Amino acid sequence: MAERLDYGNRMHRAMRALIQDVLREVAADGLPGEHHFFITFDTQHPGVELSDWLRERYPDEMTIVLQHWFDGLEVREADFSVVLNFGDQPEALTVPLDAIRTFVDPSVEFGLRFETQDDADFEDEEDDEEETHEVTALVPPPEARPHKPTAKDTTEKKPGTSKDAEIVSLDSFRK
Image (cartoon, rainbow, N blue to C red; front, side, top):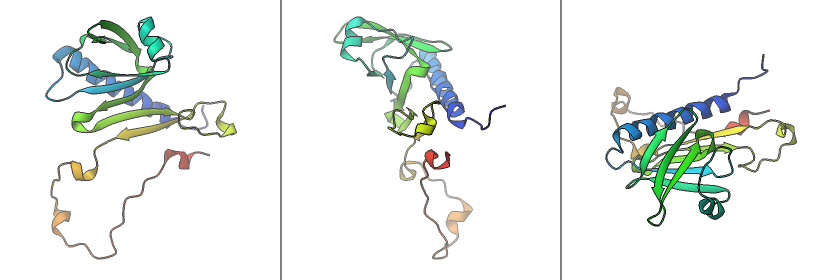
């Protein structure tokens, strides 16, 4: 039995399942409304398939946009493939879900970012043997979300009783 629960990897699997579900819906029904995606991925990741000239141009990382024109979007268990235009030249790409670094839908201010310890430039020798993950979800700020009044909103707040939100890094819980 493991000495600790690996929440980071579990969260990454859940986030990739969400991306997979969204891409499957788009493959079946097209992009609804103003939705569009910026997907950044590691071009060195095993299983990434792209033309030689694209690999030369983007040796480490590439961001693709699924918006106005794309074709042949197919989503499988471990990856997705799509045909995109690069200067009026259609190019087929295959991207493993594990290669995705960011997934953003700016139309609704939603995004996910996958970071490893190496990406964040942490230098803890104790963790060198095992990869650790930081999970970041990009969500709209509270003022951009619709406000639904509640009974609490109608009651007066007493001065000094409210506490500002505190941002805590997941790293603060690591040993």
